[in-house]
Image 1 (cartoon, helix red, strand yellow):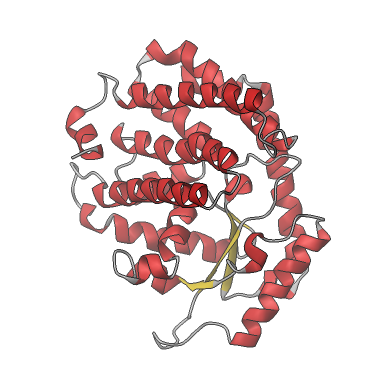
Image 2 (image 1 turned 135 degrees about the vertical axis):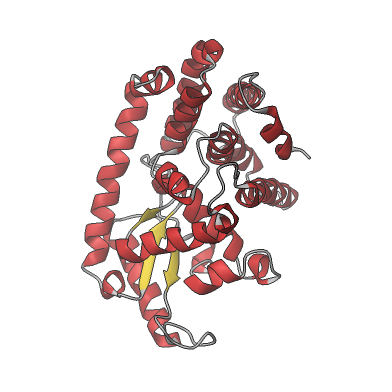
Length: 325
């Protein structure tokens, strides 16, 4: 085990949280498998958010996305009828109730079945944003865990990645700039969404810290892995996607081999865990200036660390330049 991975594995609180999340995932999958929606061969449900990142706590809920496979039907046909979709949504609501979790956000308006073919073919066209395919695709790659149909989940990862890495076949000098661009576009979309919510006078301080901690980590741990040349093939990325974001960050730092960040790394992962703990105990639900100010300072320290890592002299600057130019 390399140095940064050792530092991460020695953080007992982080490791306990990952273990708890894996146990929770097993419980969710077992419960869903008893419902008809969890047994459909043409449907895969995956979790994103805190469970997708293995960061669950006492206040965590389920953030689910649904993929389906037409299995040889016509390109204009849906995998499920409208009644079958309603039945599936009902099973997901029942799953939440069985596990005594909070109701789905937005009164369930984000529950939608996405066809796998559309997830791939719509990349870059007008439907990508309007039908929420872009967000679903990026969450599948960056922070997801299958709740049903592991086989279709793996096939979805492979098909999406095949599209991003299609120009790399037979090339040793290939870098996934197409994928890198979409990951950075996703980050900018998150930033725009935050500004929208702030303008609507929602609890913006909580969303701001979510943006500066887990969302920033999920995006830029992956970016760092790509620019460190840890990811050059679809199978490289698929292996990376099995790591939680902190593991991606530590493994990328190990590949870079710049040991000047070691003491800072230990500090920022402790800051990160303290943020997750605060979320677990609802400390961020109300606007307390002292608490919010403390976590803003920690978030700024975390962002500075990510910035410095991306500007390590041991990185290939020809590749780093694609982050801005």
